[in-house]
Length: 232
Image (cartoon, rainbow, N blue to C red):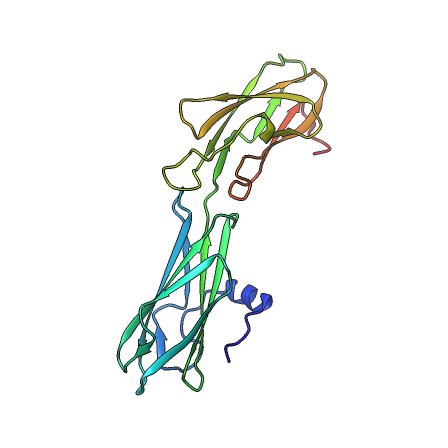
């Protein structure tokens, strides 16, 4: 029976990079733990695990289970002669993964101790870039507009048509600042103009919350007048 993957087991495995097979078994994997960084703008992460049947007998892979429904696997065949090699390919959809993604692969064979575990970890680059992340006005200075630049990666490479960014995607927590959006010639880049509503010393947080929400993370910008940023 294939072992059950618990949340605790997943966390323990995800925190350590495995470097060899778990037991003295016939199938020997070149790597059982893999880490990668997803190229900016890409949605899917791919892991390949190569193995060789080092035992004296024919080995059959009976079952492959994944810890996450976001992932799928490909295995060209399930029966391997002694000395024969194979590969298991894993594909992970990172659309709702934030900045990290994990998958645990459980494999069952017809061996006596035929249970194997593989791990994949992907670092996902930030999909929204805001510069700068802090705006400051002198208390006795001119309360003129300052500008932020907001740049998005597309959910699918080369496609920026799904990005929705307007006044509804900006939130000023305490209402001390007025904001407006200026589109640019690039469909995935915008300017956000920020202006104090008064010259009083204050501090506020402006949240950029673009759509689609299941892909783009929120980013907070600090805006304040004077030296004091208390209550943030």
